[in-house]
Amino acid sequence: MTDQTPVWFITAAASGFGKAMALEALSRGHKVIASGRYMSRLVDLETAGADIMVLDVCSPLSDIETVAEEANAKYGYITHLVNVAGYVLVGAVEETSPEQDLRAFTTNVLGTLNVTKAFLPHLRATPGHRTISNFGSVVSWQGGPGSAIYVGTKWAVSGISESLRAELAPFGINVMVIEPGWFRTGILGKGVPVYSEKSLGVYEDVGRLREMLGEVDGKQVIFNILG
Image (cartoon, rainbow, N blue to C red; front, side, top):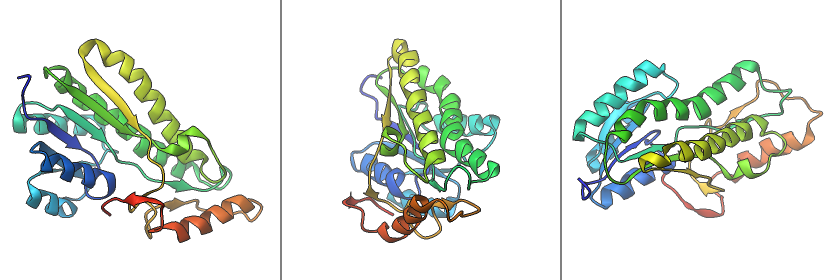
């Protein structure tokens, strides 16, 4: 099976990096299982040749394990797992609510962690080249005002990925973390970033960040990615 056709499972494949990677893999003749929270948003990928599945990465691990089993059964193996799902939470630490903080870590960190847990038995059982790609962010290199929670989640993803890489090296499974900068995805589109439930005027830098994010969407300096 060393010359087997690569099979990709991608989370948050309805838009942005997830969709772009799915289409690129399909263009190379690879098999793609594209997942997202809503089947209706994956139809165009199905038309392009992908298998599609519903997956909310915030679901209980047992539910994600069921999805992993069903995905693996489609072709008998998985070679590439791509954890894209995540979102931006904007606000000073004093401004975000505990519920918002928990949701951000549940989606950005535990979502990545649990999807990986669910697919690892199948990846270990597959011979040949296998890769897990986790999406971090360039913001994990240096924190800044208004982004502490988001930065914290991405630092966590990077740290988990680094340790996981060492754990899985004996099995020949590669692990990488992708840390994009200002790509023109839909992550800053209207209604996509989540803002803190309260806004305190004393945090002037955070206020400027809110204004900047509202203005920069569609003007990011790095080339366009499918929205």
